[in-house]
Image 1 (spheres, rainbow, N blue to C red):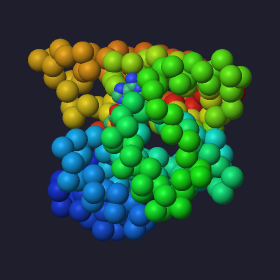
Image 2: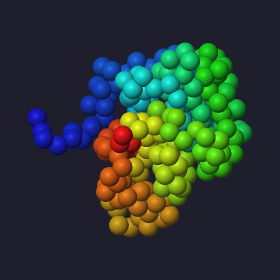
Image 3: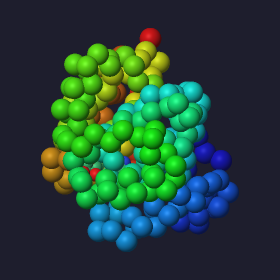
Image 4: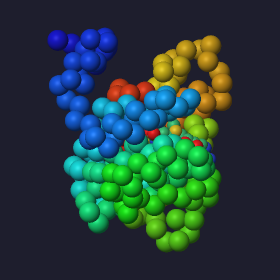
Length: 221
Ligand code: SAM
Ligand code: CA
């Protein structure tokens, strides 16, 4: 027993997966296909996808937003968790990676729930705000280029309803956040982002050590 979060050995991690992972077959197939790709490590972990799906269910979310689609694994998890009338808008710039996503969303029967917006995410988010959609989203997931995290976060907060939840990926950045020798732009951006949220009174906050670190920030009412 311990009063701090347990460090996971490979054995404990395997046990966690064996005891709790309920990955749908459609998600397993997408994960297997992505695993053969060069940038496979960009995909979130399956237990994280399951956790995010549970959050979507808990909130009874209907409108979800994602920034960073890649091959569509996190989007598939969220879409499967949304009710039949639920909708996910997901943003990416890659035709190639999102073509894989579209194929798997079709196969999983959730393509109708997912609206892929190809183009720089900041432009998509600004268009949503300009189009009068501020305050209308229940749930969001930020997982694109790290240097723009702060800008994604600010726009996402505008788009969320009071009580809405934004989840932000890679906030521990494989531990680089505490390695002083890491001074690259991505690491610095994540450090600055984490420091900003530390004192952001607009949200309730939790940094969950799942996957590469997932911050949950609930917009206060
Ligand atoms: N959430 C995905 C998953 O779990 O499979 C992984 C997303 S991956 C880490 C980041 C994605 O952000 C890439 O697919 C990349 O093309 C996209 N991206 C990078 N810069 C972007 C930008 N300016 N606007 C929109 N998407 C961007
Ligand atoms: Ca990520």
